[in-house]
Amino acid sequence: MTAPRALTIAGSDSGGGAGIQADLKTFQELGVFGMSALTAVTAQNTLGVTGIYELESEAVTRQLDAVTEDIGIDALKTGMIGTVAIMETIAEKVAQNHLGPLVVDPVMVAKSGHSLLDEAARNALVDTLIPLATLVTPNLPEAEFLVGERLDTETKQKEAACRIREMGAAAVVIKGGHLDGETATDLFYDGETFLALSAPRTQTPHTHGTGCTFSAAVTAELAKGQPLTDAVKTAKTFITRAISHPLKLGKGHGPTNHWGYRNHSDEIRTWIIPSS
Ligand SMILES: Nc1ncnc2c1ncn2[C@@H]1O[C@H](COP(=O)(O)OP(=O)(O)O)[C@@H](O)[C@H]1O
Ligand SMILES: Cc1ncc(COP(=O)(O)O)c(N)n1
Image 1 (spheres, rainbow, N blue to C red):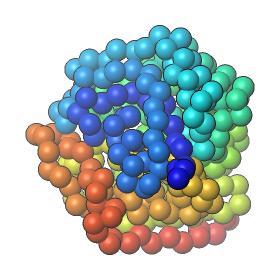
Image 2: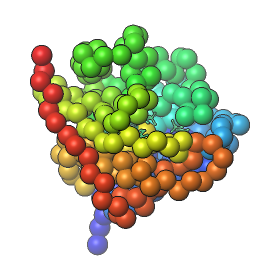
Image 3: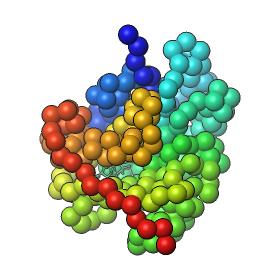
């Protein structure tokens, strides 16, 4: 028996809701063998981040070499990458070993408001990882940072999706979790089709790790060989069910429920948005 293999390159969240922990739980739920390369250790819970300990880039190199040389990778994702040195190391290894498909989640700030990478690393994303990405998955504030302007209309979001593709990513999803309203709608663009992915918005504080879980679910589906649009739709269904049936753990922004996908049947809606 064999299994699709997925790798997450991200930070550890001691609280188990985001980062490497969220990614590995998602891989497991979607039937994919999960591997990890740690970039940083965070002391974190549902209330906030109390410590960040970056690894040496050499430690990341060794983890990537260990996994690549022996087990092999069918798809991979990046999450929190706190320093330019680690970002450059990952970009070099991905390019050198032709690793992919690659999902880049440009993690910048935790739900609790704590910054997870320095200013130089935020800027380096555009030169290092985004050009290698099969899919880049910014939330709205991250997309605004990448294009340098407010994205308060659908037209501006569509223009931003085009500009992020021009940075070298094959496709982009701008996630709408940070907006208000009845629905949580994400905008996908692959250079040909604008697709809206929409689900009822759950009124809950328990959204810690939603972005990590979404990008991990896309990665798992890509590892199985699913086409990108199918992978994104499954990921949206996965995160919708994980949010709408929360575990209610901790006193702050609690984690999502990774068992939600198999135990519930919430469906999402998708439609193609005209290009002009
Ligand atoms: N309250 C919510 N109800 C339903 N879906 C949500 C909610 N909050 C976020 N989502 C969805 O979760 C996914 C992650 O989005 P988001 O929270 O914006 O990412 P991030 O964790 O990177 O900030 C997206 O598909 C988004 O639409
Ligand atoms: C190690 C790590 N990686 C990523 C996130 C972002 O997740 P969120 O924005 O939901 O707090 C986080 N809080 N911690």
